[in-house]
Length: 420
Ligand SMILES: Nc1ncnc2c1ncn2[C@@H]1O[C@H](COP(=O)(O)OP(=O)(O)O)[C@@H](O)[C@H]1O
Ligand SMILES: CC(=O)OP(=O)(O)O
Ligand SMILES: [Mg+2]
Image (cartoon, rainbow, N blue to C red; front, side, top):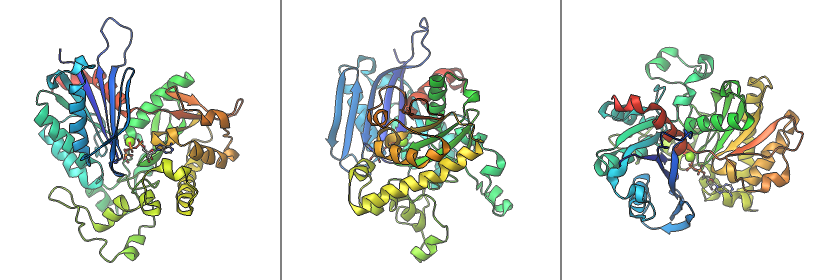
């Protein structure tokens, strides 16, 4: 029976794919049932590595040769899944009914869309505004049409969660006729992850989502902060593109916009990475691909940076803590101090023990304090409370799962998709 959902999350340094089937209609479970999860990471720090989990079967850190893009990672994972004899539910490609794609920039789309010709072209047009993301995601959509022609492709947008941001926060103080014509405003990203975080933290705190106020930090290869008021995005650190706000693996984050004109005289010229479908200037190339941890330390691996005593690694670490503080305090104020929790998520947020310790130490004046032992243990639950007992404000780690959030969407919206 073809009822498998393949949920594909193309990040800037990784591709994560989870395989789900629908719960039986007789059961009380409403979440999709995960059968397997594969991740190819290290696309910006070769060799790429495979992590695979199916029940008790685990592969960790298997080095892969010739995998250097999101598309080649996708093809590799698809072969791996169909060839795994322990996964009979996905013995052939025809078993896949839905493929969900994480698309970072969705412009003004407020919710998921079945990818037809029009949506595909619209996402393609937005590629210039997410140069590390939209084109790689579309390369996977193309491969799906070629390899899985029977599957329904659905796009889930990182930007959709942030359509609730009020106008005065979305608007840049620039000429409004140009801004409106060119749709220049804050869009915000990592929204699928923030949606998951709201769901998981509300459940953990036993509160309706509509009453949840949190400061959430999604810290991965790309990193952002989000001020979540009444369960909805009120502000976020990324902007028109995922370059704004916090630094990342190869991204500078926010800088003085004039800096680029002093960095190079050819800032506005097309970069070599430009193509017929992707127009990217040298400035964008430098700030998106040649900055961040890579430019400061030579590596994109924040785990290695955190464990190192080298001066340049310490500097990178201190810069990250400092820039994160630029959002935690202001978002606490925007929530009027009415905050349920500070939440860490994403690869660095979930594994970065030292980073969490330093950030929380630096915001203790706001009333956050963590238990150092709880902070050191590897989180086993979806949400782990690492606050000091009796502390006024919660500090939580949330193991975010963008693939699950998309697959939940498929189960909720199947009727909308099949009527397309
Ligand atoms: N133990 C660790 N401490 C801090 N950071 C870590 C650790 N292990 C992995 N990371 C970092 O997590 C980041 C990847 O996060 P992830 O959210 O998976 O990325 P992506 O943006 O590609 O989805 C990388 O920078 C990696 O170095
Ligand atoms: C939006 C974004 O930066 O995503 P990622 O962290 O997966 O690269
Ligand atoms: Mg990610």
